[in-house]
Image (cartoon, rainbow, N blue to C red):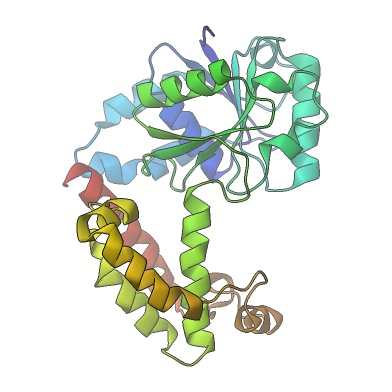
Length: 309
C-alpha cells in the first residue's frame, strides 16, 4: 500500500488551484502547488470558493484551514518536490509539455511516488511511454470546475498496476469526490466519449437545418437534460425496457450522424473566427454580460444540485 502524505499539484492554473483545494480537504495531506510563474494561488482559491462560503456550504475559517495546508513554489528542485508521495499534473494539454514535465519529475521525485496526469482526452499510456516507472503512472481526469464537479475519472494506462489505480480511487473518495475507473486507455475515457457523441449530433442537427442552435440547446435543457442527474442512460434503458430500446435503436441509429471527422459547420465557424465566447460569436452571438451570466448560472446550478443551497 502507498502511504500518501505529501501531494504535489504541478501547474497552478484554474484547474491546479481547484485540485489543490480539493486535496487539502484531507487534513493528513500537505499540498504543494508548483508553477513557472510567481503568483499568490491562495487568493485565486479564495475567489473560486467564495460562492461556497456565501451559500453557507463552508465557512471562511474552514477555507483558511485548507489554505494553511497549501504551499507554493516556482523551484522545481524544492524539497517538497523531492519528497512528494503523489503528483497530480495540471499543465497545458500538450503531449510534449506533459512528457517533459514527467521526465523532469522522474529525475527528482522518489521512486515510490505515484504520477497522475489530469487530462480530458490525452492518453496516459502515450504521456508516460518514455518513463522508467510506468506502472505507477495513472490518468486522473478532474472535471471543471474541479472544486464543484464530483466526478474524477481514474484511467489505467497500458502499464498501470491495479494497486496504483485502487489507491487513487480510495484517495479521491476520501476527499469527497466520486471516482470512477476507466479500465482501458481509450480517447475521451468515459465521460467525454458520451458528451462529444451528443455534441456531434447536436452540431449535425444545426448543420442539416433541422433546428437552430438555441432550439437544440432548449431541447436538451427542457427534456432529458433535466432527468440525467437522476436517471442515467443505462438506468433509463432498463426502466423503459431493453426490448423497446432495441426497437428504437433499429429505427433511429441509421439516421444519426456517424462522421469520424469534425462537422463542416464547425470547421466553417472556426475558419471564420467565430470561436464562441472568446470572439463573442460561435453557434450563437454572446455579449460579455451573457457570457458572465451563463458562467455564474452554471456555478449556482451546481451548488443547488449538490448542496441544495
